[in-house]
Image (cartoon, rainbow, N blue to C red; front, side, top):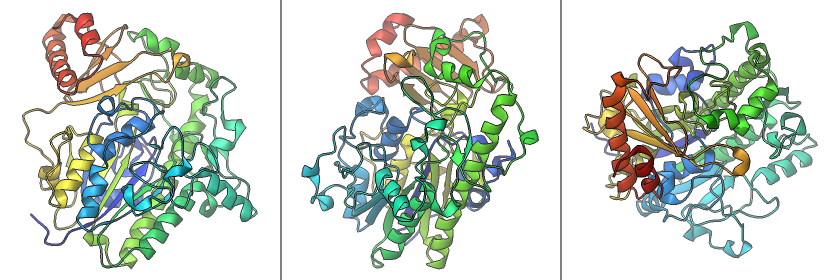
Length: 496
């Protein structure tokens, strides 16, 4: 099933959103009617995996089709130095390209020397962005911040409107007393109307770009929201939207036995303990997180409504993803960066009538590294060989990919000594998951019989064949992608 007309492309990215927040999944009371519509009228890849449960590495994979270690981007420090194949190719094919919101792939230093080179950098225009050093424009080889509109500009905008600063991470009440001062699970009501939040402001910028785009070109637009990333600082009606009695404790809440030592020492275990081991302390956090997801869904609805009003919704490939999930107390951990399903699985929903059949729920083993090659394939461009992601177009009719190698991978590197964790690599075929924790206990889970990963079966004889099969496939992947940890892996597991 092929389209004659080149589609517009709208890629919407939330931050730190679990798959069980999607209403159509039916796993929690959380309501997401607009994302549900995309799934109802398109395809949902229900088992999508992030390449790393951390913002910058994951987002780098989205736009390159490569794993973070191939890019030298395993932490939240660094710059995406790859040639902008995706955006350059789209521009060569006549696309107008625009970005609004959280980018999180900016240079370590934000040199003003790049200013004035906007047309050479991969996009025609950008609004939003998360600016680390306030007041400077953020420009790198991929996307330009020609108008310098990041978190600082939003804070300035709030001041100009006579509003309190709505930038969530600026509030010390929802940050830890520990060093570094990360967000904590404590929720707080934000004293703003919803239309003045940062996420609504980002949507406003996207809508402006949509309205002012060249009408004689197809477009590639990215809208990147901050939410539902903590801190959970949101306004009414979202803050009180969900009843605490609806919040059920998951089977894997709190510290579990048979886990690596890194779980016990992790900075995020300490933040979990600070919040409390009693589930009642977490109920409000979960309820507000759901409210945050519904708030983001309303922003999705604003984007879809604008496409409908412009009579281009059915001419637009609409993609909704998140960069990673959220532990929310599962395994006794807060936030992300550990190799468990709550932090690894992400929403991946696509809609394009005439190409994607409606109502498909796919169980295929897919990853965020598959986004870029899928987009390129849909516009008639063969993805380059060094993109290790695969195009997902074959699944658009029945949800299956029919490939012989169903494996997908994820990885993580500690953010510093303070993190008190280890570097790990992960491989899954969606039935089992093997994790190599460098210098620590390995993990193996039967995801079918044990979806909450309560039982680490790494040393059970019944799983010897599974363990060795997954180790062998991980070894091949690490060799093929020139992972610097390959020799360490070989020594620790006895594989050459």
